[in-house]
Image (cartoon, rainbow, N blue to C red; front, side, top):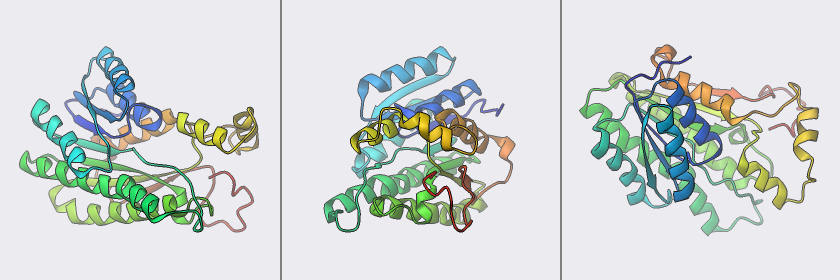
Length: 265
C-alpha cells in the first residue's frame, strides 16, 4: 500500500471512472482530505459520501473545466477548506472523437481547453499553494497512448494528450528545485463507464467487452482500480524522487512494429 497520511488531494473528473477510482484508492491509503470535482452534483455527493465512509474528509466542487475561473475555484475551495494542497490528479478529459475532416475549430478549441488548458491552470494554482506552504507536492496527469499518434478518429484528442505529455515534462523540470514532482500515465484501452458509452454510440455489439478482453494478451482490459493504485503510489513518498516520467500503462509495448494488436490501445 502507498501511504498518503496527512495529504490533501484534488482529483478532477472524479465522479466516475478513473478519477473516482483514484479518489477511492487515495482514501484507502490514508489521505486526510480529497476534493472531488465534476459536473454531476448527484454523483459528486455520492463519491464524497464513500470517501467519508473510508475515514477521509471530502468536498465536492462542481466545475466546467473549459472555464478558467471555475478551474481556479476548485483550488480556491480546497485552500479555503483545508489550507493546503499536497497532490493533484488531472484525470478529467473530453474523449469525443473526430477525424481531421470532421473536427471543427470550435470542437478543437473546447477539447484543448478541457484536456490541456485546465490541467495547466489547476497545476499553476496548486503550485502556488505548495510553494506558499513549502510542500513537497506531487502532480499526476492522466495521459493516453493515443498521445503518440492515435487512430484517425482521435485527431484532436490525440493532439491534446501529446500536448499534456510535453507539459508534464516541462513542469517536472521547472518545479524540481521546489521539490514538486510531476509525472504522467499513458493509459491504454481502459474499461470505464465512458468507454461503455463510446462503444454503444459507435454501434459496437453488446458483448464488445467480452470479445475485447478475450483478445487481450492479459485476458482483460485495464481497469480504473489499476490506475488508482498507480496514482496513489506516484502521490506518495514511496515514489521517492521520481519526476518527469510518463509511464506507459498498456498491454501494448510502444515502438513495436508492426503493431499486430494495434486495436488494443
